[in-house]
Length: 183
Image 1 (cartoon, rainbow, N blue to C red):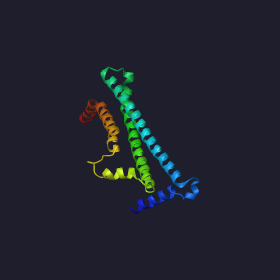
Image 2 (spheres, rainbow, N blue to C red):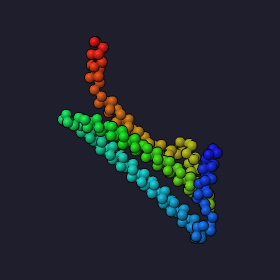
Image 3 (cartoon, rainbow, N blue to C red):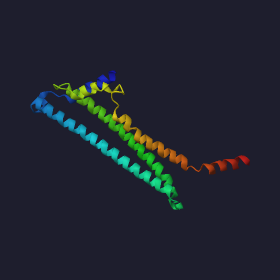
């Protein structure tokens, strides 16, 4: 808890400079900077959605490739690709998972800054909204989008891992062990 207080103090110190350093009318400059910051916050959400769309599209494409491989008798030259696709999907989904977590952390920090800025404004709509939602403690009132969003890449990782397990030539492995046991 003390570490959070130290961090908040450092953020406040970096955020709030004396009025004489601003070079503009303090109230107007403060309000304009707040509006600009909210626009940047919105841009982060747009980038997050674009990234999610990209990863979902690529994973959908990989699923289509897997479906194609299983619907046709593929030539022996293409069989190694059947192993490549799920491993590529696992790697891609892992990066997606890390990106979702990164955006979650970035948004958390940005909203902490917004709440601090709102302390100096006559209204604090984002802080009031957060309080109205139970500050993220009660899942019946509010479930953060990240809690749902994070399961999409996890689901793809599980699906690709299942495919890898399915692709392992179990009968050949069992036969090797049987031959070794009879010797």
